[in-house]
Length: 445
Image (tube, rainbow, N blue to C red; front, side, top):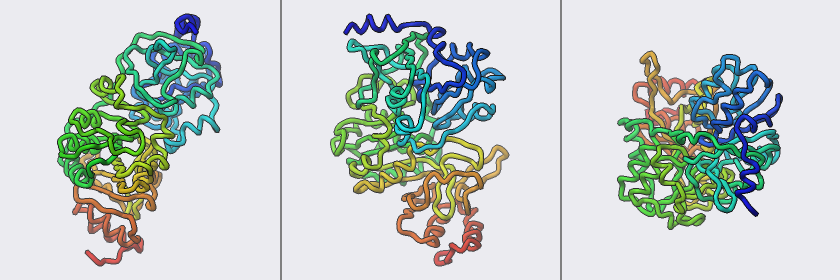
């Protein structure tokens, strides 16, 4: 097959390609760094011709052109699988909504529950075999594109080619249109600044629990990033990676010689992930690097897969938790912040792993805009807050005041343990709250 000839047959302009979108359609933008740029701009230009166009995306890294106009919500509705700050702004405009999910189930959603009229995503340039790499996000894209009635690819010369499992590339034969945009720089996600003393205190407690040869999953945020930095400077060796999101911390560990993956029962020697976002350092590292492997999220986050990886260590953030052990990692009351993502999958999967451990880390307090200090450990979750991790699944909880393991504890034991890692200024009130709720025995007051 003459792939270049086929490419030229399907090559068109963004303006021509987006004519495939009709009023009432479901349009999919893919995930994170794969969201289209030139196609999004061309679709936004058709705003006044369209109504009730429903667009899906997730972990949005820049404001889509279709969401910028004051009357954008009269024409487009944004649906986010996982909210970033940009997604929250779109929702705040009244034209966006969140779609709850466990991230591991997303490919199956597309296979069984979802229709896609038009899919448009950024990809790498085509190789000599007619293939395009999904670059930084294998995620659910293969199943999403399989369901799409029309597939439009936007080529970006700056996207890194990432090797991976089936579900990380698409062939020109399976594409309807190809457009060549302006090759924008790949959107970068910073590391969140210098770690705080609280970050360091929490990270130190966690790193002490990680054995040589462990397999790591890190969530996004200051504390997981600090854990990664500490590991890079530690004496740990022969670590592996199997994670949902690949972040700069893993690159630091790799450059320090900590990541060999030689003890992994699956994908030995490979750092496995569903999607990646970070700085240019990360994008340069993953480009055509056989040490890393992109994979669909129903592989990376499957608890049955995680259970086969001995000494699997999962490290994630939380917004707050209550005295029963319920963890909220996605909303502040009714204000939605992120999503369940893979946190529950990794909490469960780590515990199923031989020698595995899951850690939920957070600072014990948060300071509001008005300067008031509030405890992140609360009697019960605020009405509207989401129980991301049910009390039955949580294992280790870590704050700067200590680490506890909730497995096997009754309600009164949980209350005592959780209060012991709260900020001291709030402990007496939490004890009183626990007493009122009938979960305080008072054995260690």
